[in-house]
Length: 381
Figure 1 (cartoon, one colour):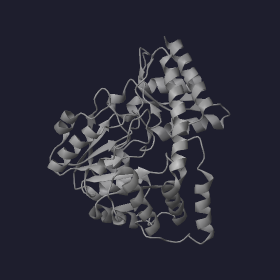
Figure 2 (spheres, helix red, strand yellow):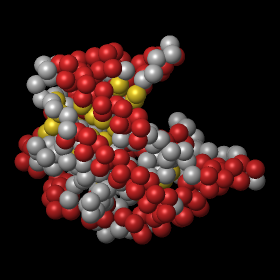
Figure 3 (cartoon, rainbow, N blue to C red):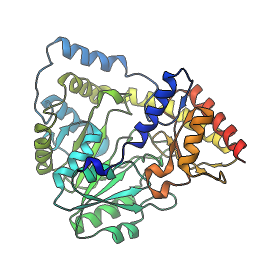
Figure 4 (cartoon, rainbow, N blue to C red):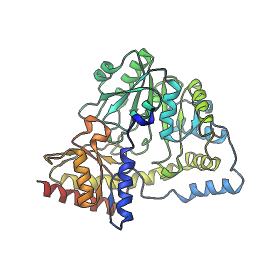
């Protein structure tokens, strides 16, 4: 019943169209998906390989191995200011973590507030038996607390936030997070914070984990990923911090679904968390260069109004006078120019009139794709 009531993934739908065109021999430039162009660093791969060779291929605790949980605890203490002990951590892939967190805190007929524009959080809410309620962000994509207070009801169990944001590139400031946290504590509402892009921030901007605002995990569930920081998208490696009560409930969810995650992937993740700071810096430098290139080229494209990109690896520019909806624009761009982007409407009604451009791929592909977008807009005008 729940599955029939949700839409398919907009990003994966576009990926499938790209793959279909490529299977026919067509050259397609994809600026649609957030997958790093670089491969996982060899030392992380070697950590997994060594673990496999040593026999770490059997069941492990659903919570995660003791070693990876200690590595997670050390990392969030050191880098995020979150005082989570190993017992307040659990290893699971990020997208599943959103769903599992909602399941752990949900009640019958509950509501969860999700950002508009924002990532695809509505579907996990529906799958866990809840009703998603979209809250509009301000024009600069910062939190609008008046809007949040207006949307919250007695049924609201969680408010989802994402910083740095996919698709907007906005990084939330400490002040707005403090205001949100105070409101949620007062109302007994959980904050589910998606911090997947925590390491990708630019021009002196700092990432603040909302989980750092409480002395120990209580009302904040902080979700992290190794996908973007370490080019590990295919590994499905991530983790979260929460109160022991919530961790216990999420573990019950895992026990009755996936059982556990591969121990060799957890060993690689442990290695990355303990030794990966230099890897992160290299990734960040690469994305900073692509971001500058993207902003420079977008500034020279008539009909495209660039947004500020403080973090992540996406642009969310506004289409000016194209005469097309974001869906029509994206479809025709793919059909006529063989360039894939995501329509802004996929991220909520407030995203209409915009497109999402990923700069996670190769530099040459990014340049060529932007040139084709410029050509397409020129034809429309």
